[in-house]
Image (cartoon, rainbow, N blue to C red; front, side, top):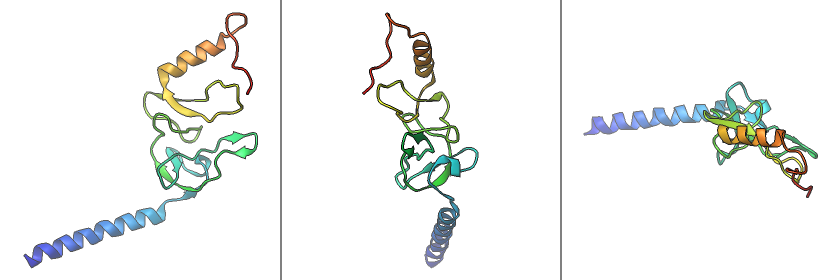
Length: 130
């Protein structure tokens, strides 16, 4: 019985050390531009932090760590932090300036892009400015 507990303790210690080293080796970031190919900057809650520019500079201003993997549906995305399979990074048309790019279903994005590319008065109008 003592031998089992010793192996369990050693195994748990190895896992804890591996997780600690992994956390320490993660690169700090303030946007996905700070990360490598195939990585996204994420905050402590796992939310993406993008490097999108708005009228007043970079959107967000938070700190995070670079993590492997693409953005998921509804998450913010940019040219460095792309979307997962079947999703596209899209900035919706809006009367207000500069909504962030987010991951949407690729078919929806294609439909929206075609709609707005062919939008001409009097049958179609751009959203009013807010």
